[in-house]
Image 1 (spheres, rainbow, N blue to C red):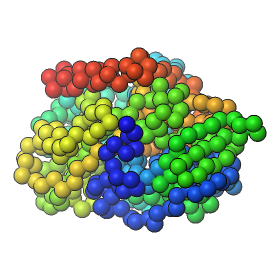
Image 2: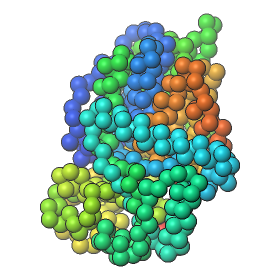
Image 3: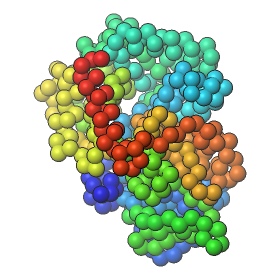
Length: 435
């Protein structure tokens, strides 16, 4: 079964609030017949669009192939949170890669935020400042305060403030959390409009974008050293290939598939809350908590709560997404029981064993970046630029990420899925028990 077609109709955005409020973009024609390009990019999300944009602006002839519509996947369905840092905290990165590499990775993440904010501005997509982290246990708050001090002292980052129970309750009126922190260097935005805006910029720069052009085969290194990328309607012969399909890559590249696992996540949106907005958040910020199956939310400019929670490891979304996500929402905000949920949707992201992105060269003229593990809005956008720069001969950023460990999932293709299901079930139980 193919995740590209398991839960969605061909060429149609899901029935999300984002799709209902998007700035429309005319479809791009499907690939037809044979074509030639300097670079082919597979995937029309943040990573692929950023790569195509930066290559086109550098004067390269680039073709982007998207199986559905640009922004169709996680890039157009996520929580819209533009977070700081990498997926792992700096103390964990220091333990894995050393202090110098951890500092480079932090600086890279700051570059990712700046790049994303710049592209959002160019695309006319507003960014609101502020992301809060909600803690369920005093020990989490104690750790956060140590990290806040460490970031200020060792990394020169002083945008995060610790908020005790009373301060956090004034920001987020819920009994579910004991304290929190607020990062004013982070932000939130309309994720699908960002992807569509990047597509407009790439198209204007000369990138050739083809939608409804699912890649069915890749042949590396023919007799002339070229790569051939095939779809049902045609093929492109290229010098360089960039893989940017993330959770939707399937079996196109086994070296990536072994290290990157697709999982599904789910979001609902409410009717406009009106005066009740202050019962959810008293400032225009985004929030995520510390559960293993994380809850995350924000309020959009029209006053609708956009709340994400719940995951599964399956080719199929659950039949009742609304009911699945309503439960964690009401655990945090029981007073919203009577509020109407107007939209419910799912999406597929990708994780890695250690939650660090997988940057890899599957072949001498092929680059891949994926597995952002729920922290991809900024990092994926930078990953596309880094792969574009690597194609242009400036590979330092890509090589820094590629040097990180990216172990394969245990058990190979046959066992990785059931092992992950077992692991997620255990951590979900811990969440429910409050462990």
